[in-house]
Length: 61
Ligand code: FES
Image (cartoon, rainbow, N blue to C red; front, side, top):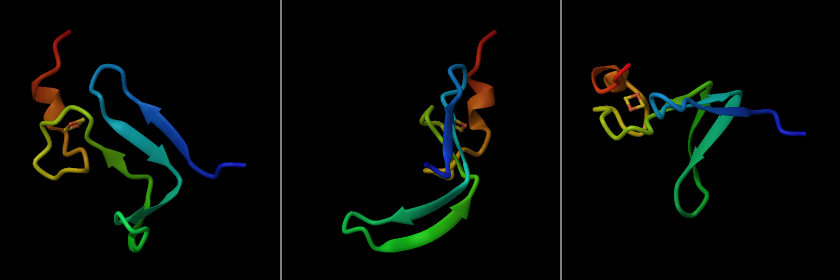
């Protein structure tokens, strides 16, 4: 059973993973282990690959 869950916000495009995630390079070498990371899916974050909240400036209601 998976120990992480992924939620993609359809409005902001942000990608939240609930659980422990190993970040690896192209060869599979561990870079960092993260808890509950939130990734940018809108392309506006200045801290890619993580979401920094910049999507709030482009959302339209
Ligand atoms: S999804 Fe939040 S800054 Fe891109």
